Length: 443
Ligand code: NAD
Ligand code: LMR
Image (cartoon, rainbow, N blue to C red; front, side, top):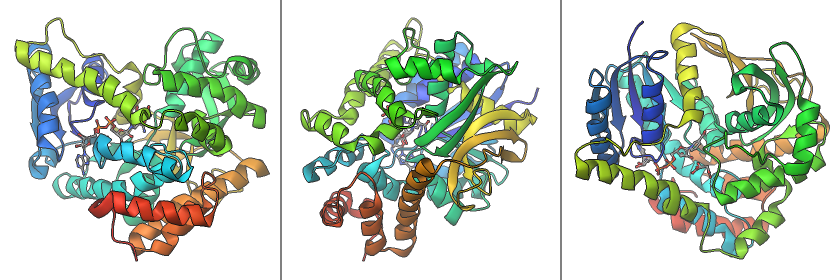
């Protein structure tokens, strides 16, 4: 079988070790010739890079490994770029979450004003790595799961329409793993129908390969427990704040009982509840939870490996739920026609929704990329919510392209999470001053 060369962009990410371990666990399905890490923060990446170099020498010495901040070294002769950058890192995530609280609005990584602020920063970083990839390895595919995926995907559609960038999110994957637990199946035995935007969608069907429909059984469960399950199958979403979110799915379901909701809808359907929760402990948001948890855990492990000069007995955890990234790479490389929920241009997949909207729907993925499966007509309630939200996302990208203060103000005003144009303006001025040069200048 062909061996592949992969660069991970955002090599200093808290997810890098888990994904590398997952790839080592999947070498039979996806053999590696070269693995490179690329980041624009050499110090941060250096810690993970040094530890992984030691680990790979011990566990997979045949794989050529390097870590670098030099784009040419990183992006030359690669088949796939797995991209998980966080422009502004945790310091800015914390601001995205905390600045809106000053204005009576919740702050979150991808939803509402926090997501809009992060989107404005991410576009520049994403364009930069896409351009490096195309310059040094024109045939390479980017498997992107950098957030905020909805705004990033819209920016790619507008600014790099011909680039080989595939946008995918792990939330539908994680929740499907919970559903499989609820019905006593393996995740790979289930096939779904789903429609929406990224972090803004609904499952309309969950069937096994024999065609048995589980949606009612799952609905009964979720209406009582949300997506909380006894055994943790969705290992990426386990912290206390996530348990709250899984539980809250029960109230999201109550609004649209016919379909199973994506957990992120809590931010749009219950923004007041989220704000009330956050304002009780405004100093400790999700960013703090990750910095004290996953980030500390991963970097402590890496330092320990470096200190010992060996990874023996201090293995990094395998990010089992991230096998979808290998499934996606294999779909492209081997034309497997894997069925995956992805973020793609609508072009009729949702019949009563604009063609040029970036939507999240099941796709068949092969050598030429994803082909969206038609999901038909959607109800007016979801259609209206989605139209409002997709317009916010489009306005952010337009504001970025045109350096338009007005469009950014409109984006924040239109967001279902912001109560008025006045609050939106005050928030915007605060976000502009907190983001400084990380945002394009708006006038
Ligand atoms: P992190 O801050 O630990 O890592 C991100 C890395 O990206 C940092 O090392 C940073 O230096 C680097 N970076 C920032 N801008 C860069 C640029 N322009 N070029 C190269 N490197 C750059 O963050 P994390 O918590 O590990 O998350 C990484 C990303 O993965 C985030 O965007 C997060 O939202 C995303 N994520 C996506 C999913 C999904 O399924 N869509 C799930 C979880 C996390
Ligand atoms: C993370 O940091 O894990 C996120 O990207 C998603 C979350 O858990 O808030």
